[in-house]
Image (tube, rainbow, N blue to C red):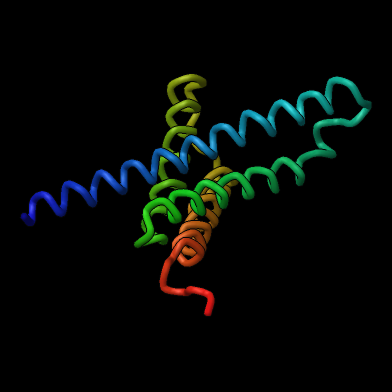
Length: 136
């Protein structure tokens, strides 16, 4: 019985994590498309969109953490943190294997913030999906 309980819990964590990562990647692709169209068809320069791109990244990670926490229904900080960590790991591996570069100091700060933002989203996702608060 104990093994089945752990198996179900790990399956739930994996499914929650997958939902969060899919959301982050779809959000990243959609926002990249929007920003690339803005850059292509207007006179806006990339440097002027820097803060908007960063904000979109934080929104995407928060949403992914929120979704994974909501799907998991418990341990939102862990689910959100894992979601942010796996995203950062994927970006790191892409950069390292694809471009033969490690993270710079600035990128490390960004990715630590991504993990923390995803954790906050996971916490909020668990609390918003909780059935303990019902309307009277």
